[in-house]
Image (cartoon, rainbow, N blue to C red; front, side, top):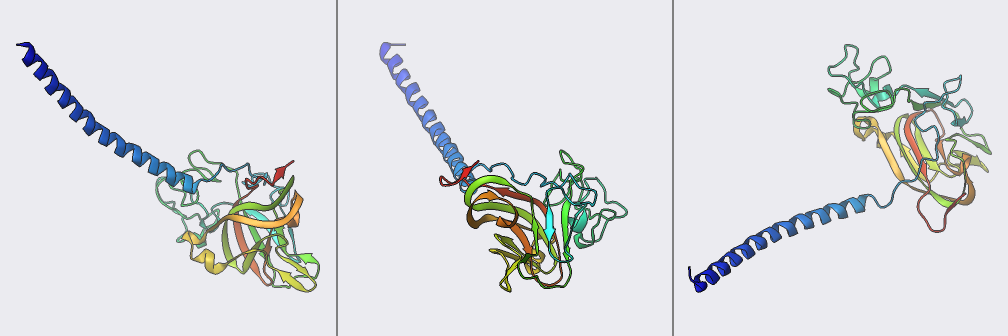
Length: 270
């Protein structure tokens, strides 16, 4: 092969290689663009890392001798709080292959002795494969909270509220709160002084949740998640952030409550 032919062959090979690389580059650019798009979607849904839960006993594994989760308390004439099994009202179901013989017909009928079966090795939409009462990678001694109140009005200068026991030296004016709720009767409010009656005026709280909202949610369980404003304070706990119940008869359930301090340059955790 002459020198001219060798050069021509080299040029042809180079051009072919350039075409291959150009084709690969387009494919690479498309993959990079797709990854950037995935990252932007993730960033839009995950603005910041979540701080530790200020509610120490949020899984309600530690109970006192009356069956009340340690750290939780309730105020209100005749109001009662009690830790119950996570099968209750179908918050989660058993992690088993086949439907148990004692399975409930619907989540609303579910109890510890009569769980609702969500399917083979499926504990339901809230727990997936591992929940509060077992499963794969789940807890075994967790509970959810049941709250009942009689049909009475709030007493002046008193609360009708559940306090979560979140206490921390902190300077802030808002908290991030999240929890699952199932309301059988009545309504609840969340936030500063929720459930308080002062000067014969009832304060429902800054966020209201009623039975219509939970009934419209999957399996009757509604997840609230958001920022709730409080007064500017230096100690978080008790009525600075509580769950109040409306006047009248109430029955509701709460699971996995979470309170965190939002990232803010003006807030300072002690």
